[in-house]
Image (tube, rainbow over all chains, first blue to last red; front, top):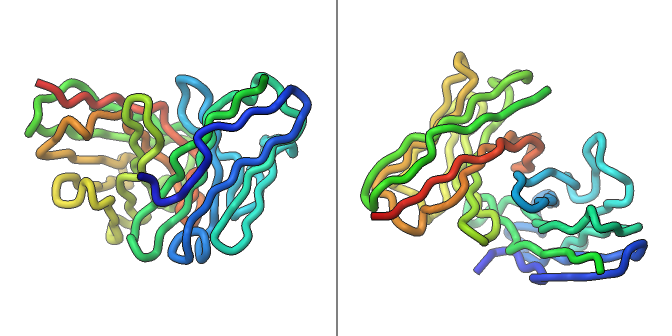
Length: 110
Length: 118
């Protein structure tokens, strides 16, 4: 059972937009920065979003992040098959004094 | 190009020990906090441990506290994870990751597989 809650899967058609939610509490998302990671099959995770809504250099502006209260959302527009991957949210939990991740969301581009 | 390269994984019996290493290159290693994150077969990411830049502030997940020890050698640009009293549930790919600030990981190694089985 993960501290952060994500939907197990989402799907959308090529060219469409999808959002992935990440729900937590005041001890984690509510008071810490959220980051998002993309993990393509058989590869290491890759940072997509940091500080809730910033993109590292080289990350497409098709990816966006937002946070409100104790929830965060990753948005992906202009979907293509290359976006099929597992997506994870992460943050620090101040009560647990540990890093925490969501359980991951598998994106399928139909 | 920034690189993190893990090594030291392998097959170990329950109750055994392993030491993982993560060698860093092409960045000022001594300025960064470093983490270990693991991923069991077919499972999600699980945070394991972190160490600050000078090695004096350390944190562990409850599941490994008292069994795993994180350390670093800034002269060798390497972070370590000493794993003792290994259990079957520790079986996973172990990644080291660089912290860009506030426990957000901007560089990851390729991972090293640890299998705990008799």
